[in-house]
Length: 238
Image (tube, rainbow, N blue to C red; front, top):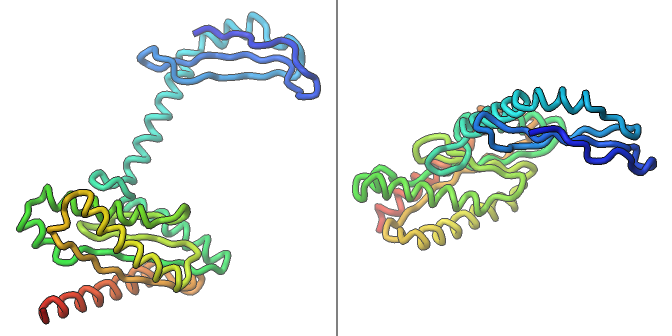
């Protein structure tokens, strides 16, 4: 498209006395954005400005299109395709950043590791489509339970993590109850209550300044497997 002068005289108090808009189109000639230029003097933009900007508008539009495509690719590379939560790469990058920031502030950080009990048996008995649906229910339950600053990632087959910046023991305990309740609701909505799905949750709540990323993961992982063993013992006793 062609550049167009929007206004040539404005309110001096706003220090924006002239303006010019340049529509930008991508490779497919579809409009995708507008470049808006403002000036501090009246009638600042001339016909020469308009001719020059119009001549490069296609190139600018294609550049914007490529940058948006790149941003989409980068974003999708951090998303688990099945469940829509973050993947292992997203967790590795963000948790390292959060750990560093929490250490600077002297804050605690909580990491919850969540794993589906005996998930292989679910796949064997009901098939992988039902297994995938169960994974999505768990991911949705975790997202339902998360607050604004929290985030959920799937880091393995049926293993998820939920990161809680600035958490305390009371908040962690509340989350565990919230997750279980939300999972029951999600399974009911998906008509999957017959799976009798059970999850184990391990928690690591440490001072970020005194713990490494590996220590957070190891403690949460150990606690999760301890709960998994307890569930198995209870199941065998029934």
